[in-house]
Length: 634
Image (cartoon, rainbow, N blue to C red; front, side, top):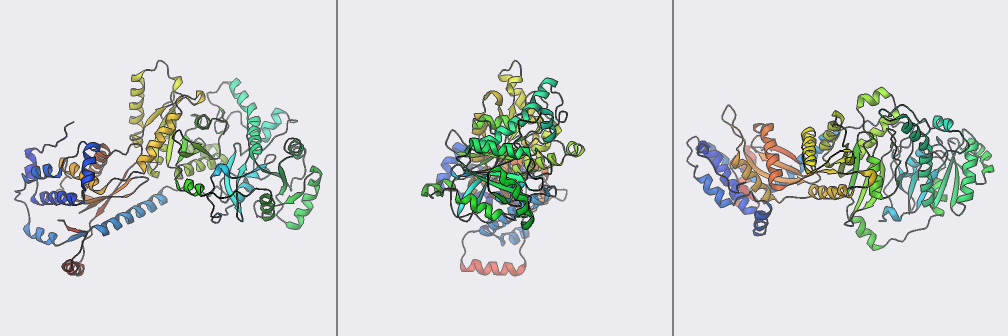
């Protein structure tokens, strides 16, 4: 590609006004452009030209005849306050962010149960998650473990439904009481071994048909049979790492055989840990004492509480914190906390291998992996330290099906799971969109991609189960990537990586690509370099003229925000820049300045013309001497 632009003779038809604007823009860029930036620009942006070379080419066509001298004198008197433009650019970003927050709504009306309590600010300690003491909540299904979890951590982190078996994986959340901070672990219901397999599946509401399309009958039966033991294994892992165990029972249902068996299991295997017997669903304090009396036979001192109304939770937290060891705050923690931890959300349609990717990255069975569609329900947060020592927060999410399919299924649990997945996208920095190699890209994939782009998140497209593609070569990868980019046009800027999570092949490339995307998403382009890129793009392709002869002009461009990179263009009239020209400008910014893996936002602000009174004030200010202003033609 040539490094110098050649202006054709047809550009001699440019108006004198446009040429004057371009000349002043060049002079303005020269003022802002420092020498150090000029040396780095030539190596980083090979397509940029020096201001002198471009000015010589522009001056060749400066003898236009369609220029209004009276308009020039009037517009030269107007001045642009650069400081004001920077403030206005930040205001434009805030206005656009509020607009997006109204447009990209997430239905919260489904979260009718659980705690809506928001935690107050935690104590001023900076302790990493992996050093906090653990408190595990265990018990049989449907006793209110997730409701108590939400009460302790604040908000609606866990899905709470009046049906057993909703929680399956371990769910972590920070909580505190007084000056003591700790980590709470929500677990799935622990089943008893005395029950038959049919009763277990019926109590956990595990379907043998929903989400089983295309799965052989033998594999289907095996997956369903293994589900209770996999949920129990996740609960056992939580108990193993916990310092305090909250054994939760149902005060309204009374003492049942499953409670007795779990109590014996805890006494035999975890007698060295502090176990608190909490009797849930005791909304009335007086009646709660009566309900709790029958649980004395379990060998623990029962404590009546209510996760919904919060009665008794203060006594519970006091007893929990009395058994936890205080962690001394070390100065290194503050420095470690100051370093930002990027969040990576793993999203996609059901059964594409999201949980397998998470387990392969952390090196353990952090989440349940099953061919049953909809196995993952909550958004599971996990910390990971990358090869470069950088910390990451991985978020495994439930599979996102079409809205019509979720509505037709009539499952409130699935609807809540999809909401959790959308929230995970919103609170993440980079999204790993997982697609299956042998499956075609569907309309739902495109909708998820559109959501990621609108949320302004960085993205890495992960093609999982790459080993299922037969006879692969270098051309296969290239053709596959072209097909993905053609179908997912909303994410044509996202890198594509290939992995086989079940075998652990190339899963590290996901973290490497996400790290690169996060750096690009947080990069800020210098104002002088940015305006130079814009000048080059305008010189190569000026904005089109309207039927009335008007043409759009770009006076000044600045990057007003990062994550995602947001650029504000100050123009004479934003309506003079059609969508095709805006896409052209975005394409040129990406070609010259990079930003792979992240969406970039271009906001166009029409110049506000000051009234006559403000003009007089500006002239008085100018006479006294002002800095940071430059007279530009409008």
